[in-house]
Length: 152
Image 1 (tube, rainbow, N blue to C red):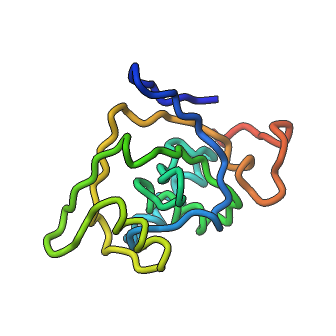
Image 2: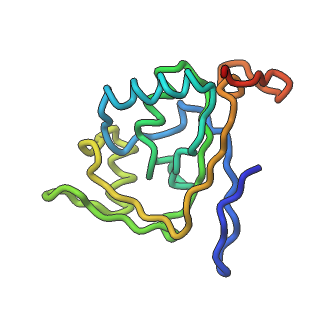
């Protein structure tokens, strides 16, 4: 299991496989970027970086293009890191939008996403890499014995 490095006052956060249906986007994404990312992931056969979610609502903090790529690839679950907003700072990158944790979660729950790249979440520690085989994320995958090495 991959862990996020902790600070003295926090516990390490583990990466969990979360069903795509439970993940709530908070921003739109750029379709061409998501398609390119999905093609790269398919070619490598690996998922490298987790999607970061609010631990209570499953609203996306970071990883909208990875989420869109997961849908394009037909995956059932995605590697996610769940954090509390108390561990994260957030700012707006576009003028005219209210960006705070309550508004972000409200938009996620009401399917009213921001334009792409409107929010910027800053994490206290670097995000961990997970390097999971895509076959472990496919519908029906449940055991590591189904894992196959990525294509060269």
